[in-house]
Image 1 (cartoon, helix red, strand yellow):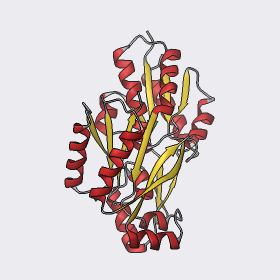
Image 2 (cartoon, rainbow, N blue to C red):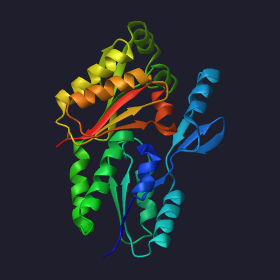
Image 3 (tube, rainbow, N blue to C red):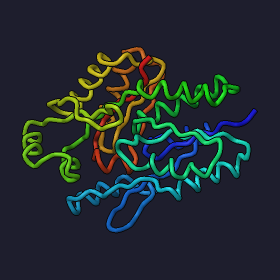
Length: 283
């Protein structure tokens, strides 16, 4: 029986302990700050926030390049010579990473790429679905595994609220007028992945403690999420009180397993401090 190896990008924000436990190989995306290129995962998120405080600018981000994918797939092949590699990738609609993976993959046999059309916890949800399938059915054929993963891609639902409009404004994602209006009225946009694209779907008004709970209820009313697992995301700065509050809400809504995921440097560059998000798979 040939071993199936899974891989993904750092933009999944897959916790390191889970990646190590389940042998999921993670290739870094990039953050460019003050002229220096940092691999996502090797740059403390707090450094990004400190940089913004000093300059009122945010770093830029860039995709995993072809060479890095080539190195990743070569290493997997060296460590597991007879393996089949399935790469579950960051949405192609928001990064060149997936296209670069396709180019690198041309030099390999038995390597399959799946565009997850998602990011952060939404991507982790798909990766962990694949992990659990492999653990439950270790003899599953690669074709069937890929078919099942691809069937789950449109069922992965992610919604998050940035903690502040400051980073969106600095990145050019909101106009000055919208920023001023939003700041005065304490309006927070809800960002969702729609067909792989980041889209502002609704707006909330108020403090994050109130808004996070509204988002949770709206999300669960809109999507029939599998109650076996939910992923809750946060960026540094979200209060422990809110995290505890959202854990209780998830428990009250029947979720058996709740996993908190910290947004890494790649995601935090765009969302800023104090953000909150939810991800899960529809049944």
